[in-house]
Image (cartoon, rainbow, N blue to C red; front, side, top):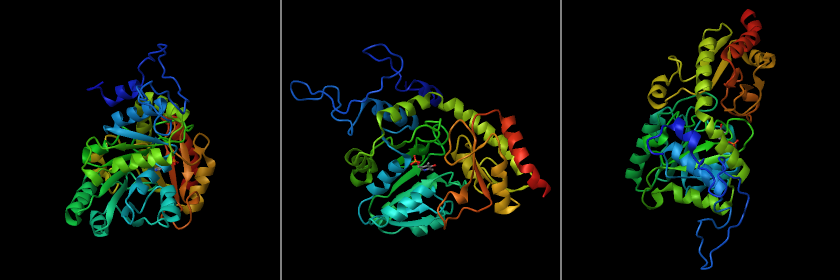
Length: 391
Ligand SMILES: *Cc1c(COP(=O)(O)O)cnc(C)c1O
C-alpha cells in the first residue's frame, strides 16, 4: 500500500478478504476474549477486548495510516478521545487551549478536569505572542483546534509547535502539541507534517460521515519521542485501562465510512466554497467566516496549511439574533440540528446550543455543508434569506 494516495488508501485500508471465508467485507468481531495457545501464549495477538479487538484494530490501523501516524486508539466518542489526551497530562501540569474551542470540551475542562487538578489557560491561538506569553514552567500541553468552532479561526500549527519546542528547551520538560482535527479529516490538513505529537478526531463527524456513529480516535506521531516526551504511551494507557473504547459495531461503521471519505469531502468542500461566495455577496449577511475567502483574517495561513478549506462555515446576519433565528426557521432543505460532517447539510443557531458565557455571537448561524446538489442548497438559503434582505 506504500505510495498509494489517501483517496486510494481510504477505499482499501482494512479491506483484505477474510482469510477464513474470502468475504470481501471484514467480519464484525464481537468477542470479548480470545483463546490462548497450549503454551499460554497469544499467537494471534488478541487477549481481551478492552485491550484490543480485531474490528477496532482494523479501524485504528486504517486511521494511523491515513493520518501518517504510527498507531491509533479508537474511543467511544470524540470527547472520550480528547479527554484521554487531557487526562494524560501529568499531575499538576498546565495546558493551553484555544479561547474559541468546541464547547463540549470547554465544559469538560471547567466541570471535570480543572476541578480534578488540571491547570488551564485559554488564549487566542491565532495570536502567537499570546500563546508564548501563556507558557509557564509547568506547561505540558498545547491544544490546537483549527479551524475553530464556530468562528473558523485558523491557527498556524507549525508556529505553535515551535513555541512548544522553545518551551521545552527553556524549562527542561516535555510540552506536547495535540490537534483536534475533527473539522479537517485526511487528507485536508496533514498535521504530523508540522511536528505535532497527537492528532484527535471525533469520528462522529466526517470520518463516519452519515450521522449514525459516535466515536473518536487519537493518532500517535510517526516517530516516538524519548521517555515522558512521548505522549502516546500515556494516552494508550488511559485508553486500555479506563476502557472508554469504541465498540466493535461503531468501529466497523467508522471503517465503512472511510470508503467514501474522499468523494464525500470533495463534494462537501466544493459546495461550501460556492455557498460562502454566495453568502458574502448577500445584502442580509454581515460577515462570512470561511477560511477559503480572501477576506478571512487567517486566509494566508489556511492557504499554506490546508489542502482544502473544508466544508464548515458560519455567517452573521445584519438583522441580529432575531434575523439569524428567522433564517434558520425558514430553511427547508437544510436541517436545523447540531453536529456536522454528515452527507446532509445542517444549519444551527450556535449561541443557543452552547452553555451561557461563551464567545459565540448571537447573530451567528453555523453551517455544515453536505453533498446535495449545490443549486438546491443555494435556492434554499436564498429563499430563507430573502425577507431579511428586504427588511
Ligand atoms: C463533535 C466534536 C467533538 C466531540 O465529539 P463527540 O463524538 O461528540 O464526543 C470534539 N471536537 C470537535 C471539534 C467536534 O466538532
